[in-house]
Length: 210
Length: 257
Image (cartoon, rainbow over all chains, first blue to last red; front, side, top):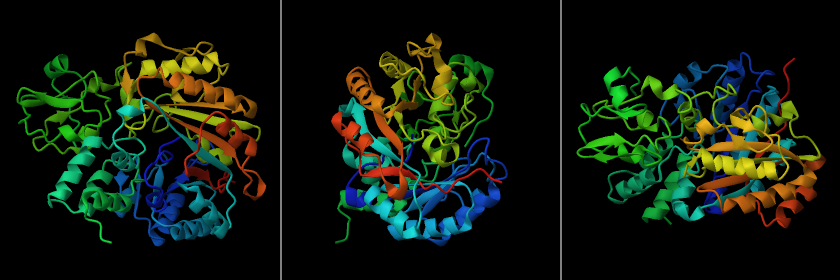
């Protein structure tokens, strides 16, 4: 439990980082899910989901919306990214109205998500709390690197690739946005927030505009 | 991405995720793409260290080798080596659960399954994350500690359940203890009054584990978004704090008519 839960970093940065998920339940409502998945995607795109994907195909930063939609099967996992609370409110309102019967999960900072639920008229069923990291923490990369690598919950992003991208940006060989897309493409689920990542890179490389 | 059949002679020499030495031009481009630093130079060619490779396929998916020297052997699904792939590659489906990934649907569909209802707390321990990976010996240290604490029921649909040799002791099947994976998730469900004991156990075993692990706790929310204070108090009492971000099930799921 679970790959979007343990995102880390500066709290103000995390307030611009939400994940949305549609889940089918094995043996209960997991047949012919594609029409419902397409409705979720349509709503997410309408409210401006910056990245989304299906682990069976890959993320929007690497594949076209059409390709990901076309390859949806009953084994697909559809999920994505929002960067502000307004998107979460609009998404929840519309999904609730559609009453599709699929489980919906939002990951984000509680002080943002819970008011969003209230505004959308949604009463959550349950909360999964992160109780932090334990063990040999002295072996972990620095906090800035972790704030990027933890945006792929399966930890497909190598810390040294983050450093490589930072150096490329500092040298002017990549823009922060292009570098963040390269990092996003490691995350096949589509839950990597490339917008937040670009902001982190800008700040870390001194390219942030006041 | 290439996944073509590897010549038998090559498989005998260097099994599993491989870089063909006769094709590799030694550019090193693939090396920063490996999450576990398993790709290094050996002489003038890049080579995958099979001991630490998790079989996560990231090099195949992302590194875009300019001469297509990276390939996957058909031996990758040989047991117990196959555990590396099942636990480390999110695009593979775990044979024990039929679900992509390392855990189960857990809290994400709890509004439909009614898993972990009132009076209970779900606890998950994600070993190897963030980023370090782990040996299955580390997993066993935690399954044993949990068993000693009196919890003998790991979620039956979680792949780790099928890896136990003895649920009473938390011992894993011995043949798999030499394997390494990017991460694995132990999922348990406890009564609310057991939560403090389990959290205490996890703090104690943290010093023995040769990696890191994340802990999370899952609770059903009461009417009008009432968060059970006794759960939060147990967390505080054992010196844990919850992070500002959380995963919230919106309660919109149901069994279809």
